[in-house]
Length: 141
Length: 141
Image 1 (spheres, chains in turn orange, red):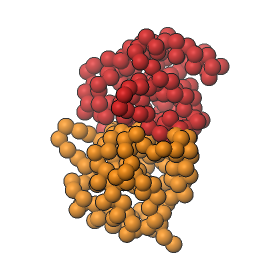
Image 2 (cartoon, rainbow over the protein chains, first blue to last red):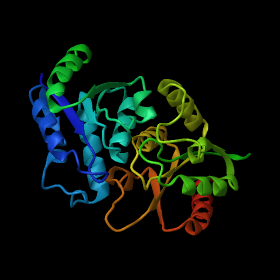
Image 3 (cartoon, chains in turn brown, orange):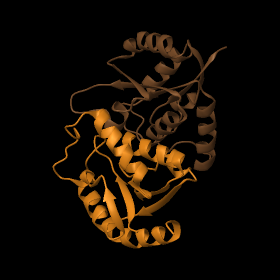
Image 4 (cartoon, each protein chain N blue to C red):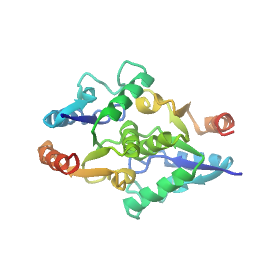
């Protein structure tokens, strides 16, 4: 059966990594069905979607609940991404956090210090493919 | 019995509102015992605390679990704050989110759209005292 992957990245917190999200989503598609792909959508601005927040929240939570794994890009601080990680950890879901380390920033201690989150650091998109192969082999079988 | 209040604000995500966090914590002290007061500490830089992330995570989660209510300042996007909101919602805890609205930014849809979170907008610290009186009267009795 095809793995269902929920991808999370910053929206209103900042769209700086939007092109990168798209590339990660493309790589994830090689491993399964990806939900919330709209996050990589260039048409989606920082103001978010047009539907009501409650609608978006409930739909995204339902998708997250149906997923086998949450892959979160956590370089740009985001309340929504943190929230989805918190709920997923509570559900015992596999959570993979991809973090682009750089001088002058540090990943949230609540994410880095959570045993329920598999954190992998990367520098460029080229690092992502082998990381995904490794984590999906280790944790999804 | 004195109410136990867990206060959450951005640390590694940005310390821009640090002075404001201190003022909010002072106001919260009028309502109960406040945990994680170190967040308002001027000595705490963006690099966070010196203990290991796992230690901080486990201690903060224990404090959060012991609290009657989570008060989160959500203006600065933060993975840790979002994570703590997600876990608290899952526990059925009372969650109050204080947001300073401004042109050009919008609160995360996952927080604004979550029925388990009481969102209150404010402009200056002077707005906080009446907000706290209102929410604590409505939700903590």
